[in-house]
Image (cartoon, rainbow, N blue to C red; front, side, top):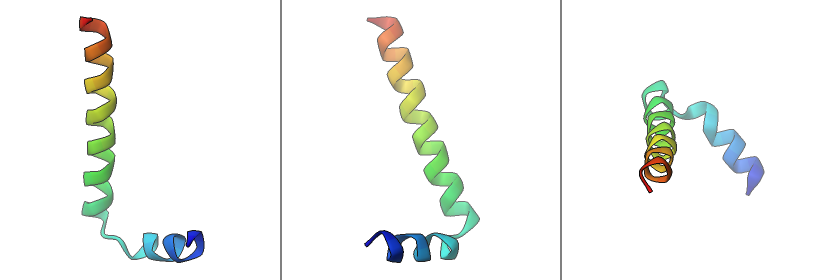
Length: 38
């Protein structure tokens, strides 16, 4: 499963990678803000 996953990664578009990165950053910021607020 890991092999097929690493094989699929290079085929992903830069846009998709950017979207995933932005989503991860959004989650991290949201969590940080949540912890700061509470």
